[in-house]
Amino acid sequence: MGKFKMRSKDLRGMSVEELEKTLRELRIKLMGLRYKAKVGLLENPGELREARRNVARILTVLREKREGEKA
Image (tube, rainbow, N blue to C red; front, side, top):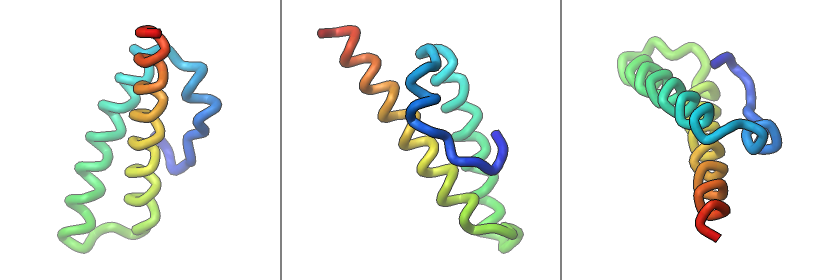
């Protein structure tokens, strides 16, 4: 995952498995960013914010897809 904003439109085109894989990768990256922030090594604090928002976007799309399957 690079330093970019994931678009919800693009995420909706992904399968549930792809979204879950991306979510796992982002959460690992987020843990690393949080560690860097704590020890003062984080060069760009905006990266932490963007990673959190990307996780939220993926969770939102996953929820939408799962609710769509139930209906």
